[in-house]
Image (cartoon, rainbow, N blue to C red; front, side, top):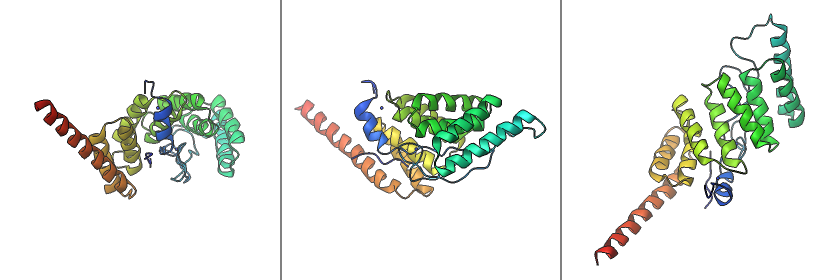
Length: 236
């Protein structure tokens, strides 16, 4: 049964692993906490079927008196309008222009979103990594980056887990982050940890986590039964 995440192993963490993750993973919406954002949904990419959020402003330190800031903000806002209209390519060009004028976390964050939707995963990863370097405290950027690492042709669930752990520490009460974290933990065989995260997700309102709690509990029980049977055989 494919995992159902709340937007790949060496054997390189790639194809078979990737398919189970992609069918389920839903990353955090593209948003930058200190700015305003719009609701949205995405799935194996950035939460298809969840809440979508795009950053619509520059950093809190921006000055309206700086012409570069003003132009960067204009391009950022126009890009967001294009994104909401579904014109991802036009949005990408405007976000690129915004970032070229004035590097800021919001433009880079949203640029990553457009790259992701255009299946330009390496570019999405680089944009989100730079966004995080400018705004390290964004749980959404870390969660989106985790999604990109999962869905990339050469999947890196180890890096996805690293960023989901950061996102969880930044927003411990966020049920969707907990759900995503649980899904990757489950896929990598860390069942007890996954169970804990699924329970946390359900406790904070993600009802669909209930089926995963049952499934993971059954897997854990199955492993215990198998271990007991093997122990009995070794004693004979």
